[in-house]
Length: 469
Image 1 (tube, rainbow, N blue to C red):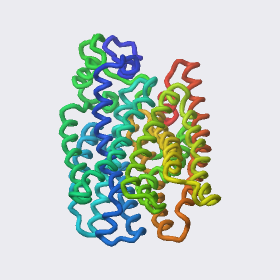
Image 2 (image 1 turned 60 degrees about the vertical axis):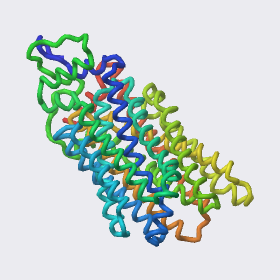
Image 3 (image 1 turned 30 degrees about the vertical axis):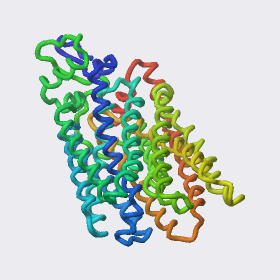
Image 4 (image 1 turned 45 degrees about the vertical axis):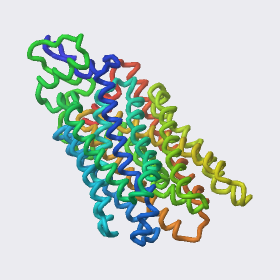
């Protein structure tokens, strides 16, 4: 830190803060907005069959509806990340939440296949753009010892929101039809955006990086550490990131150690997203195609979402303590359970009753989505504040390649004569690739952490310095 008496290191105050009401409040409001994001994104899977019947869609056409929303999330991740690194995290999150609330309501009013495609695409832009910016905001307020835990807790909101699609569909669809599910989620999302206007802070790291509004930074720091006096006319800096404030270009994501971390992270994200979004979109229909009832399929999907959240909870403290390499064991353990579902009933047709299928599906999802949560928890930790939203946004947007491919391929498989349960064998390829990629990332991450320990510096500063070379 500089020697001037009026210099204040914002990163040092954030790193040494207590688990205060400010940080807890930020996590709580972020949890709720990701809850509605998850509900609005995933609820379509629970009402897919009535939509399919009303518009007389083929499995391929329904797969197009799923995938075009995910194409929207890809664009949203790039676009909102770019906006957030220029105008701020707070307005990007707030307006994206309001937008996907309105668009989700409009989805409930769609009366043709074409309208479903257009609205789902635009809705996806808002939904996909909000999440990485919300992660970046929380990472920028969390001490390193809590970062993975906080991101995981926030993403549990997404899984719980996704899980609520089943009960809400079972509640509303029989009496009000499938549009009521979208309208319900959209109204709640709009209310959440109003709460954001009142409660969501801007990132103090962002404001410091952009040299904006010292009085606003000072007010935020007093909330974080009220016991810490600030000098008159403070000069706010980020000692753990240096003075780099240049505009973002994608090339900075591939400099220094990032030249390996970034592509391995992206590949792992793509393959993890293939399984996550295939299960979220097609899961209930696959379960029904295996002979189970619509209500049972919805409850199975809800249980799987809860299982994924549980997997994230089990993993989060290991990631904070052991680094990114800790997340590899969950996708590795998912592989035998996926193969059991795929081939167990081939060897003995009556082998998989609903109870056993439900159990195996729950366990495999716990491991798959737990690992996916682990990716979310590490996606932003390698990038400095100057372009953290861009770095996280690019990672999650590239991941949408897998999100798009998963539901799209699923539509073709369901339209074919391939036995339904054997799709789980194809899914097992994805966690295998995930494991290899994150092993590489984990080795590099551990190297940076060891260097940080030896020098007393910060890993983010090391990577930021390399990125600026």
